[in-house]
Length: 314
Image (cartoon, rainbow, N blue to C red; front, side, top):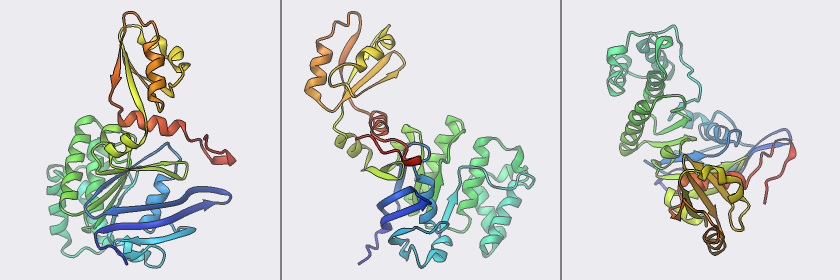
């Protein structure tokens, strides 16, 4: 029986192009009003998976429901209830903000179109710029226009594909405030991102690597279940030790953060023995809290691009 509290409930979702599997038997459950983030290297199937959820692509295998509708048989009903913001700005640059929104409202057959466009302009802070051509906008304002266009038809599910790529920190912060406001109002949000600070703002996350779902959960759960233990090596000259530290027993990864190195591994005792046994005069060595970025890099190093028949590393 379908759980009415779930916006998305799918299993075994698969997409192939010839002999290449870009999404491999992925299952996912997303609650209504939840902000769910997708992480993973470029080319890992994140965008393909989003397009299958909103009915733009048909899965080759798998089943499930999106917004209560069958993913395979009722794709048309799903499309009309989903707002999709693509990676690339896709609106008409020779039309104004207001003209672009009016056009999108016509496409969706929105009733009382002028009032809806006016309300959307106000909601996204676009009223004063409504006559400005889209091609003259900065990245942050283009982002607002794209988000406004995806909300015109009052969707239940919002799919955002790397929505803040290339915009400044202030625009990113404003965007995330709007996303949380929408989720609080009951809209379910699925998004892809490469920014760890954005990932931490999601209610739950999934890590997709070259078609396979490797991990999912809240940010805290992903850190806890990774099994990683992390130490900080800090001080002038720490960066010169990267190669040496990577050779240590128990050190699965060494990641520089300015003058600080994060040394992580899954064998806590072995890693501690290796680090405390070193003569690192002038440097501060101490246990540290494992971060989401440490987990992200750990998962990346466990996977390899499957394009052309390569297999993941064990």
